[in-house]
Image 1 (cartoon, rainbow, N blue to C red):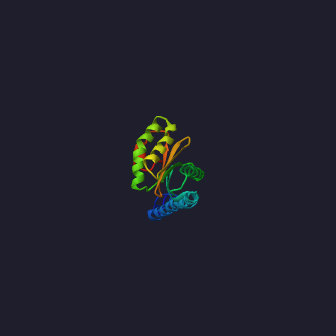
Image 2: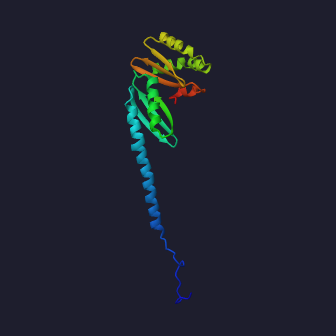
Image 3: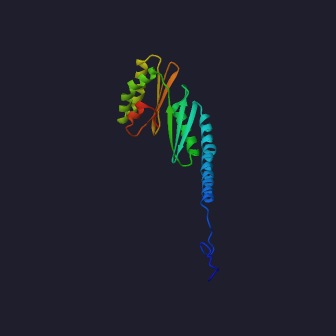
Length: 194
């Protein structure tokens, strides 16, 4: 085919694509998709889960951290809270709203120096009883701690996956949910246990 000395650039049916509008369209689309995802996470998943957990008796504060595949629920409990009941209710509520993600419940306590000292004192015996599967020794450990520390209330409960320990002294409380499987002594001593 012959033309008057001019050829069409790009040949038949080609489109001259300008990169700036394409880049802007891509950025706007990506922004809408990711922004929509984060808004969905905040308002359709996280906020209802947070408000449901905040309504559990004994919970004084709750915060959620969502990652791909994991929802971490951080709780602060009132001193009178029943740790095992709260823990189970929170896990049940979260499981229904987590969308198949794993759930980690972290109970945070700001126990005073006295409770921390009691916990450190009884930690080794408690860990030894759990490691050797002598769960029947745990109530005796609680009673011994109460005898050594006047005014202390020490409670322990157990289900198929955890031992729940609550220490109360002078209006303050320390709550620990200890997993039955695995040596996590360092986590028990140094902070919250998932």
